[in-house]
Image (tube, rainbow, N blue to C red):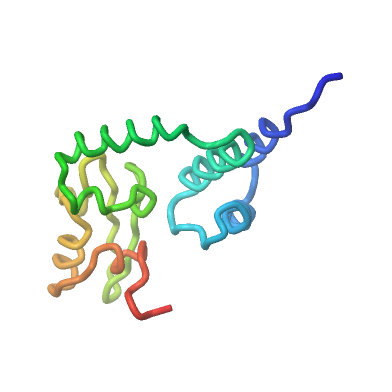
Length: 150
């Protein structure tokens, strides 16, 4: 008797699913609202989650190894390690924000952000350049809710 593995079909279906369908799957599989990232990000995280729930997650020793590699990569910088990878969009993502009637497009790069042809290390620096005031860049670009606001 052969058993049919439905997982490859579920993964293939992610490619043809509508964005609202992907978001509905996100709510079901993660029990949270989907992040405001691009479709490719949603597809890849959903594909991983589907497999993780079916076949199991990473082994504890693999998680420890990844944490060690991450610490080695960020030099033990606690501020960098506190930034969760799933709160930052992947390289190539375009963030669009309208401010006082002007549309601003920021492209996420491998080592930061690009706005108006200039590299920036943080979204907060770009938000300040746009507005002239201090902003949390994640809040300004809609990647994070402002504290105290639902």
